[in-house]
Structure formats: C-alpha cells, structure tokens
Image (cartoon, rainbow, N blue to C red):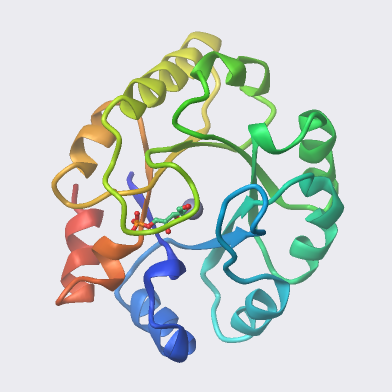
Length: 215
Ligand code: DX5
Ligand code: ZN
C-alpha cells in the first residue's frame, strides 16, 4: 500500500493548524516535516517549537526529515517534541550507526537519506538497521523543484538490495513528486511518497490526496 506524506514546507505558514487538519481529514498517512539548518542545505525552515505546537493538534505520524549537520546533537530534542520517524542524511555525519541507535533508544523509527549525487551502494550496510530509506529525488533545500529522473535508479537499487537480503523496509521518495511521475517512483520500488507542491499547491487538495492514494 502506498503511503502519502505531504511536505508542510509547501503549506501556508500563516495557517499551519488548518493546513494540517485539511490533509489529515483527506486521508493522508503522515506529515513530512523538513528541518533545515542553513549549513547542510542553503536554507532555513523551522525546528522544535513549531513541531511541538503542531503535535498538540494532530495525531498524524510525524515524519521528520533532518537536513542538519551532525544530527546526533538534536535527536533527543526532536524525539521529545513529537517526531515518530526521524530521518537524517548519510552525508551529514560520520557516525551514522550512532545516530540510528540514538533514534531507536528514544523509541522512534529511524530513516537514512541520500542526496541525488550519493550512490545507493553506500546504503547497503544500513539495510535491516533502519525502518526507512529516503532517496532524495531533488537536491535537498527547497520545495517546488523538478524531479531528477536518474534518482529513480537509486530507488530501484535500494529496493533490489532489500529484496536480496529478505528485508522489508519503507522506501521514501522526496522532491518534485507529482501525479504524473509518482507511478514510476512506485514501479521502481518506492512505497512512501512525499509531495509538497503537488498536495498543498493543488486546486483541490482533497482530490489530489485521493489520487495519490489510489496509485
Ligand atoms: C526538499 C524537501 C522536500 C520538499 C518537497 O529539501 O526535503 O520535502 O519540501 O517539496 P516538493 O514536493 O514541492 O518538491
Ligand atoms: Zn523532505
């Protein structure tokens, strides 16, 4: 079954509560929260205070995507403010196993992400150690970009590596996902779709969510 995780980055920040209630009512599975530090990516988004405020009004699974350097420093804080899944970048640190252990010791699901230029084989040692693998389908940092088609081969490679090892895990794609290209991401092995602009920017948000869910 395909899971949809709309990215809050594309929502109207002056109406955060209403935006979340709208997508929750329309039947999405998770809420994707993009945290950017201005170092790992050249942009700054939002952090713990926003997430903990939203936690009070929503029971959606909070899928937190950390685009920050040296993430181990902040795992307990994101766990405490209401994250359910915490995904960090392979490229953001040298202590990936420690980060995964830290996330798990906080009782949360762990995900590891790669940028488009990072080869999928670096993820091999983490298969079976994380609950989710995130393949970025755009350069992280900004919403509203166009999907880079080559990244779908990384999705396929991860899916094949997992199958070969008999491991079941979530494979998430994030960046430029829309109703035109989502099916091909799914065919390549993705089962969790992040979509920002294609959900919050849709003329009819509810029908966009239903269309994604019926892929
Ligand atoms: C980019 C973020 C994405 C982004 C997706 O760094 O990780 O989650 O907000 O937005 P769209 O779907 O508009 O590309
Ligand atoms: Zn993201």
